[in-house]
Length: 179
Image 1 (cartoon, rainbow, N blue to C red):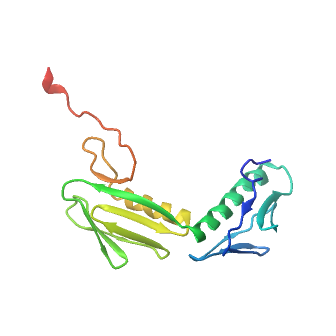
Image 2 (image 1 turned 90 degrees about the horizontal axis):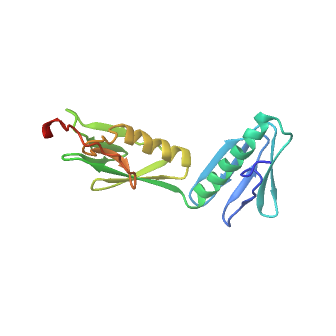
Image 3 (image 1 turned 45 degrees about the vertical axis):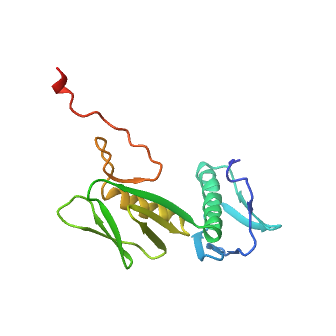
């Protein structure tokens, strides 16, 4: 039995879960999310909880057991609390500004980098810090990773875009002058 898959999911007040033969829909105060049902996995609502079970112990079905439970739990947390990731911009002359739904980033290139924020995700800009937030955990993580990939932090001076709390391993640089 999957350790993650066998755990029941508590349904908070204000959250409605609709179980169709092909999709699972979760609606809450922040919005609505859905995911497709997987073959060999049974999702049932019992006593105010969601219970996920599998039909057999084939490896493909066992792999899906914990996955679908984690996806449903992420949807429940997303529509109640939401998800957010914080990014920091380090470097002389590096700036970020919000222009409507787009981000205008000065990252030391000869041109400004424009990033179009997808629908369903909000980016809050405070000086050189960005907070990416939304209800879909996968989409929030993807947008944060795309923004970070525009200028990854380099190991010599630490300039670039990094996650808040991320530790950048620093290198010493040239050491030939000491000889």
